[in-house]
Structure formats: C-alpha cells, structure tokens
Length: 339
Length: 236
Ligand SMILES: [Zn+2]
Image (cartoon, rainbow over all chains, first blue to last red):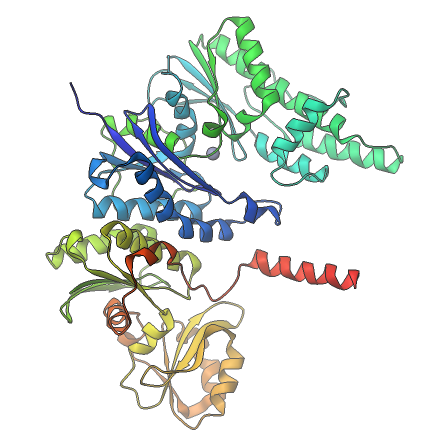
C-alpha cells in the first residue's frame, strides 16, 4: 500500500487568508479561512493595501490552526502548495513568502498553484473529474469557460471581454445601494421578486463563447436613471431579478453549447459566483434535462479557500512540479498546462 | 546564540547570520531585484555559507519598518513565519534606527532619511547613542529641517534617499549638514541583529501578533476618515 500524500495549501490572493490540509488531493483534513469582508465593507470593495496588512496579521495563525485541526506536525506534510497568481500582487506575496519560509524551515517541496486551477480542482474534493470536462469559472475577477481533456490540461474556450460576472454583480449592487459584497443581496432580491425588468442578453458574435457584462451593467444604470427622471418608483427586486436573469441565461446557454460541441463527460461550475443560487439552479436544471453530469462544489468551496489550492497542488506535485525560493507573485498569471 | 537578521524595508536587501556575538555572513545589495524574488534565496545562501541549518537558528531580528509597505511586509512575513515554525523569538527593530546605527561613531546628531514621495520622508533624529531626539515618523522634509535648524550640532544624514533631498538639506542647514559615506547608507542586517540583542527577547507566543510598524494608515482609511468628518460637519 502506498503512503498517503499530505499537502498544505495556502491562499492569500484577495481578501481571504486561508490554509488547509488535504489528503491525496481529494480529502479535506482541515480547512481554515479568515475572511476580511468586514474590514473592507466600509470602503465598498477590497482595498489592496488593507488586504495585505490583514494577511500579515493572520497568515501564521491560519497555518497553525490548519495544522492543529488536522492534528499534524510540519513533518507529516509532503509539500506546501501556494497560490502564485492571479490576484492582488501585495496580497499574493504574503502567502508566497510565508509558504517559502515554512517550506524552507521544514525542508518541504514548494508548489506554486494557479488560483483558477484551484477553483476548478475544488471539484476533486467533491467528485473525481471525468474527462473531457468543461468548467465554467465565475468569480469577482473571472468569467471563463475552460475545457480540460485530461488532468492539468487547460484550454480557454471563452472569457469575458470586459467585466467579470462578479464585478458586474458588485457594480449593479452599488447602483441599487445594496451593502458590499453585493452578489448575495442581488441573488436574494432576485429570488424573492415576482417581477423582473427586461434587460438585454449580450451574446456577442455568433458562435462566440466569450462574455460581455459591461453593456448589461450600463442598461441597468440607464434604466434606473430614466425611471428616476420620469419619477417612477424603482423596485430593486425587479431590477435585481432582471439583471440576474440576463447573466444566468447567457452563462447557462454558452456553457451548454460548449458542453455539446466538445462532447464533454462532465460539466463543473467553480468560483465565488457559482455560490449564486439562481445560477446553480439554472445550471443544475439545464444539465439534468440534457442528461449531462454536472457538479458544483458546496458553498464553502466556491469562495476562495486553500483546500482547492492543495487539491490542485496535489496533482501538480505528483507530476513533478516544483517552485523555488525565488518564486514571485504573478498578478496576471495565465492558466498553463501542467504537462 | 545564533541569530538570523533580515532587512527588506526599502530597496536594499540585507541578510546576516551572527553566532555568539560574531558576524559570520552578511549579504547586502541594492539592485532592482524584487524582495519577493531575492529575499528567501539570500536567507538560504547566507545560512549555507555559515554552515547553519534552519533548525539551528535561535532568534530572528527583522526590520519592522517604516519603509516601502510591500518591502517591509516581505521581510516581516518571512521572519515571522520562520520564527513561528522554528519556535524561536522574533525581535523587530526600527528601519530608521538601523540606518542610524550605522553611524553611531559620528560626533553629532544622526538623521536617517527614507523618501516617502511628495516632499515627505520617513525620518527621525537620533543622538550618537541612538537615543531618539525626534521619534520615527512620516514627516514633511521641511518640518524635519526646520527642527534641525534650531540645533547647534552637526548632523549626519544617512540613507540612500539622502541623495534625493541633499540640495534642500544643504540649503537649510549649510555646513552643519554632513553626508554619510556609501557603505553607511545601506541598512545592514548585522546592525539589525546588534540592536535586537540589546532588547528583551519576547516569548514565542507573541510571534503571531508581530506586525510591521508602517507609521502611516492607508490612503483609503485617510480618505474615509476625512469623509466621516465631512458628514459630521453637515450633521452638526
Ligand atoms: Zn477566487
């Protein structure tokens, strides 16, 4: 019987300081997330310098907690995986330098992980992947359709040409004067509302798997502006429902079309916006109807966490990927193949 | 006792290993290589040259700022993580006092300078026994010079960034302003250790709470506080 592989994952790319220990790339032993949402609220968004300051305060506490919950010592680990990019550079650097120092002091190998690969591999913590696989990655910074023909192989099928879906949610939430972060509030309002304003669907040119959300955001702002000028009562729930319906329809339709074109065996959703109830339901219903296996991780694995970094790092580690003590943060890192 | 010292609070990088009060290795550079790339390899190399394993380090001294926010954080994150996982104490030393420490033989006052843009500096004024005459802080350069102009003593300006402000300094202080030589302008990790050794060692439980001393709140907080004041005025 071969020995278990134990990986410590560290994630600090945005406003969560997280550490997690994962066994064999699939089983979460411990998962610790220190969220900073409360301290960014008053600014209406993540302030990079404040995020970095919080990461320095939290990072060793979070790693210690992950080890304690797992009842493990550094000597029980096989490797340290850390988010190398993309993300806020100052924030990334805290996780990276903590990971480097920890790995160096304990003579452990170090593996730099792409944040989006992490989001996709969160699914491995739920169900093993079946290839070819299509991943819809939706978050505050990303809206991408990624085709995977095997482990560690990533083909970008479509991406946003302007705002990420989560960004559009936050901007519309601000227009509706909803508290930060706005996504969950829009989701809730949309869910409760019976009315929905009709907003356009932005499909781009025929056959494109790319997305555009800035036009939709402008439509929402124009609608609000015109309604105000005409002295009409604006029903936030109807705006939220209309906006969400447009986003969800486009995301679902493009994912479905790509799933059919590439004849995939599994479709997964990943990233913070995949916690959105409206989107989850639409994807679940659609793929059930089509008879295609669809998985989306539980909510705590959709938002940023370190278990997903350990899960992706586990496969990279097996394939011999190693990072050096000179690893730098890569804020604009692109997904690359692991072969 | 084996000490590891680290300073990444500004452009220069310095790493040193001191054993039983003797400097074994010191690496100091001021190239454009980012600290996130250069700092850990320098730590690794310094220990290798000193033939010391990470587990043999008994205490860590680090520059805690002020300086470049990102730079300070990289040194502090490395030092803090090493200290925590090796279960050894971490001692922070002011980056300004580290520079001043280079010049403790000077007969007069010592003024370390780090540029903070828009005619502002991180600075302090120390006696040659490293007693602060003016506390570490974020100041308008003019305010520092005005304060120094009332003193009778010679003043030695230390730090790479003195070059940026030298004309203004000489203009106000004339002959009394002296400029440190090249090797004194660099923060030295051996000085970080030397000054850390004079302090009481903290318990290892305190490591988690070790944070940089930025000497400034963030711009976002400054703006937010100003807005609150505005709102306050309107409501009054
Ligand atoms: Zn993310």
